[in-house]
Length: 222
Image (tube, rainbow, N blue to C red; front, side, top):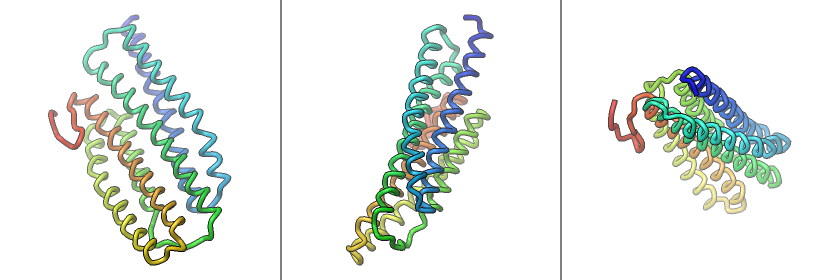
């Protein structure tokens, strides 16, 4: 394979990953919209999107493995391919989180409607922003933007902890609403996991561009 053809294939791999990212982001946005408006038909759209996301994950992995098998990539290209494989897995898991959220929304709609003193859309907005910024860092090969995503993770974690504390008190004070509170707890936990996957993507961008392993926020290079 000529170097020109190889780099065209890298571009194709990047484009396919961005399509995958769009599918995972759409699933997450739909799941949160379903929660916000209480529409189970939107939940069904999320659930039906899962097989396509799973197929896309397999296709991207196969493309990446084929490139590794057919070529001996230079260091930065090797890091790019390895990062794509890891980002691809995180995007598939973002899709899984969306399905989990949709399932909890579906359950909530079968229960008596109650007001719970937590702001799930605010947590969702922050987690979605992390994903969007991590993907923009990937598009632009921008490790500085990726580092900003890492800093946002603490805010998501704290919001999730605050929701946990609030809903735990609700379960104790209003046990008749325990199932609703548990469903919302699970939704918050899934959104916190979306933030974790965004963090992983940001770390992979830094690894690709700088050759630095910053997992667990330990700076090992520049």
